[in-house]
Image 1 (cartoon, each protein chain N blue to C red):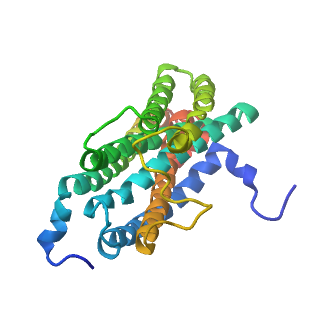
Image 2 (image 1 turned 180 degrees about the vertical axis):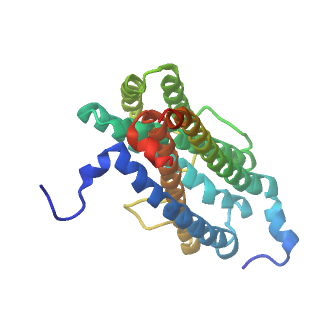
Length: 59
Length: 246
């Protein structure tokens, strides 16, 4: 391992903004996409439940 | 009928695929998480400092996987589109539209991480060179696909139009891949080649390969999870969806 201290690790040899920016942007996009997929599914489930409610009342 | 082995055509029906995808995607997501942790450990703690680029080169561990996935997803998407056009299967269009958003995000990330790498190493966020421009065109192809999809109300007609767009655009993928060979460009050549020994230290190579596989797993999980909702949206008036929701 080439890091002597925690601060050296976060400094990334002077490239902190670029390195952490890249990894941060990637992690952020993946997290947001996962949330969007979950929300779309929940919305669809709600729509389907609402649609099927009247059917149950008729029968 | 074939009684042996897996009956692949069974899963061509959206109903069966819905449940299959539901069982599969958590496994892919789990694999993605485990591999990403291993890959990140290698990327930050085992891979040595680069002789030329210092610690700045570590961007490679997200830049290569996102760039590669942006191209690979496009090819897979065009493949589904072709199957849809040839066999008129419903699932193909759904898979293509499930892959497009993930591909678009990876193309976007490829450009962002590339920019963040270009600034300290080349002194510029952006140049209009062959590699960067063709990757930008890839992002626009994804966005065009998504825009076309949402502009046509009938999903089956949208699938057909989008399939044609996807197939025409697939020409761009080899252009991106070979751009560093065909044209003079600021962008460096391929990091990994099949024909010659790797030019980088073993932990760098392994870290990168593990990150690439982690991103594959993530993309598969995302596409499978998304296609489930797309199947529900399109099959909402069928009996099986009504039962599945109970």
